Length: 155
Image 1 (cartoon, helix red, strand yellow):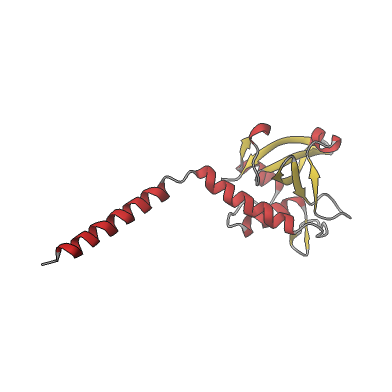
Image 2 (spheres, rainbow, N blue to C red; image 1 turned 90 degrees about the vertical axis):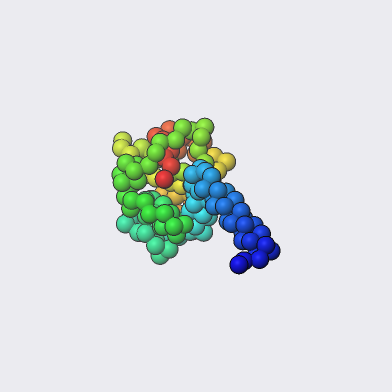
């Protein structure tokens, strides 16, 4: 026979495990995106100063979608490599609901062809174009506010 003390300890451990599991299962998806998005933004910010390289997707050189792809992969989430693939997969987000880690899409030269990663406070990090380096810009500048199409959130 099991002693009463052992039974009480067993019940107590089961209760703690049940509370722990319930606590984990009630964690919202929003919180998970925030954590991954913040990690991706942090990784992208660490790349500021890296040269632009067409087709680049590593710290030796990035294009816009390569930077976003690398940042999210480093944060543990696989997203498409190309701007078009990213556009197609993400859930659209309204301007007022943007959060750190959301992707921002821009119309450059008459077509959706550029992406950056939102870092909060109206700023985003991106790999702009040939001859430039990964940098942080404000979304409210004349150029980017006119070119902005929409934000999207990886799931």
